[in-house]
Image 1 (cartoon, rainbow, N blue to C red):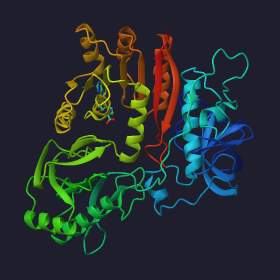
Image 2 (cartoon, rainbow, N blue to C red):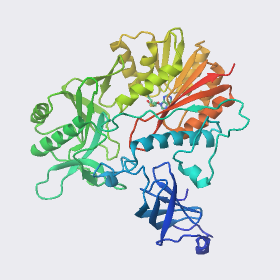
Image 3 (cartoon, rainbow, N blue to C red):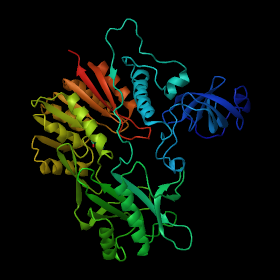
Image 4 (tube, helix red, strand yellow):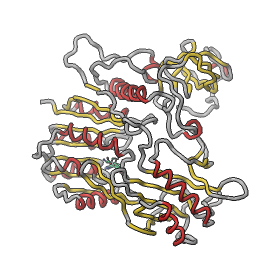
Length: 504
Ligand code: SAH
């Protein structure tokens, strides 16, 4: 999409003159859908306007900011008829922050919309037939097209894929176990430290005392470090000049163990009054188990540098998911919503249909979380992951839990799994949990060649999920059911677990 405002060579102003809307004019729009970024999809005389903050079913007054041939963007001015699903966003900094996109939509409606988003992708991109797709809250593309991509009721050969209602949280707040906060200098004479988030579209730090999706302990840790470091005269890092010391504070909390880790990312090794700093942090946060320092001297917006050392306490904290215990180090990847992670993994385990006899491959295994979960119910599990440190953690986690029927290997799933095939490893079940871009084509090919009974696909991106399911369907697999899981309440993200069976 051409994002800049300038006209292309050859295009004339007349291009936009016949349109039913014009820039800077105000219109009444009917909102017919909710786009993939949580924006309202509005209609004015058949023309589509994207309007941040508007909800499906609403009638709003909006001012056009930008017009293109097919659609435009407008600013919400007034809600003339409100959706019954509209609520007041509880967070006072919701609009400034941008970390959440759906706080103005009731939680129940968020869950319905997320299911709808998954269905829309399965139908539109995957060309898959969904049973009883329903109307519910329509999503953007479908609303733009102006047609429901119905599953069709007539002449069904089979009932279609079951997409279950999204599994949400009973208390969808304060769910995150990790905070990463940039530190800056407060305006004014005192020059204390501030920390929070970058104002949307900029690198100006806005101070934040509380984040409603963050565990309270993480807020408390960040507040304590800001206060203590400020009192000790530790200078915050300045992105513009590259001077100053304290860049980021990271707080991690083990929901099931109560253990706390603090990581100070600094622009250099020496911390003035380091022992005092450590002592005061320990005093302020009695449950702290680990205080680490990560040194990042690069002028970059990447948070972590290469060197991490322990200032006090342990190198790791622990948390548990189900019966499995995980060591979490300063930089290792660990799912941020531990309550819903357990829901997700239990579903993956359920869909894997294990009896204790199976050979299972866990592709994109990270620190081995799903692998170790599956290993308790399988004969053997093979995990593969591209980040070497994550595989070190995975191996350590296997030891900590005395789980011996797992083998972890570093490398691309699309490289290592074909090698396993050559070695004669024949999985009954393959679980994949790829990053947003989905599975590598070579991996999908290898899965089809290995012919496991079942494939379990864990996905954080419904569009690449739909694309990959189409490939597996064409190669002889049937998508049986899909379970959307809400790992990130109040944001537009949705996770799904899919059960596929080999057609006999
Ligand atoms: N299953 C894990 C991690 C999922 S995130 C969990 O639930 O915690 C996806 C993982 O895929 C990341 O750890 C990323 O490092 C890894 N990854 C990305 N590309 C990969 C590739 N080509 N082969 C193997 N792993 C890859």
